[in-house]
Image: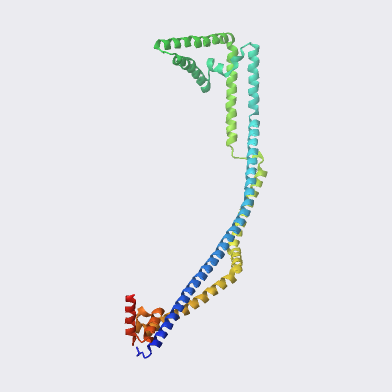
Length: 365
């Protein structure tokens, strides 16, 4: 409730003092706000540093554990790979030995047949080229491969070569093509007939016997291929003495499985036990600093709360006690001092006159 003012100069001095006190409190409030914010940033930064240290240390230790176990597992994998390679090599050697053993009789028989054929041709003075497969494909073809060789030879000599010669001519004509084909027939056909007459007419019986020998060799070769294919398809590996390799492989697989289980257990222990220990150690090293920062921040908050309360109370006090008479315009130390001087000079008898005189003086400047 407003009261009558009897001493204007004391009133203005009290108002000026209250405004100055509010200004000081406001500055203190700002300072405390900044200090509390600074301590809050420091505390957050320290907490983040601790958290980052924990995270990086835990990750590093976990990676070290994984790396150690992975290194041992990798060594076992390399050893297992080499053992499997040795086993495969031993198996392939065993297959080759078995093929050689089971086809030995047929191979020996083929060698005997080749010697017989060579001896026959030498005794009958048959030209050496007559014993080749190409000769028999041209003059005594039998079987798909020899017939195919005969047809391909015919196509090359009587089709491809003449046409190739024709394409090389600067100006090719139909007559030229006919002449070239005629020449090819005469040349290649003549050679074929001449060779046939020179060999078949003179050594027909030896050549026919050679044909029979070659057919026997071909039949034996088919049997050898059947035996070889059967052995390679055979899944029974007991004949190759691979037990020691299988034992080594089984042992290494077991060791790898045990290492994998130990790795899993080590990581599980790390996550459930070691991780907590590392976190406690790192946090413990920074606990005192964190507590000190938290305590300082809490003290700053408490001082700020008290100062904010004092600022609010002082502001309400000024509003209730002085603003009612002076308004916000004159609640400034310099203006209050000017009003007091006006009253001391006797230029005004009350506050309203002093404020009006102040305004008029300000306006006149």
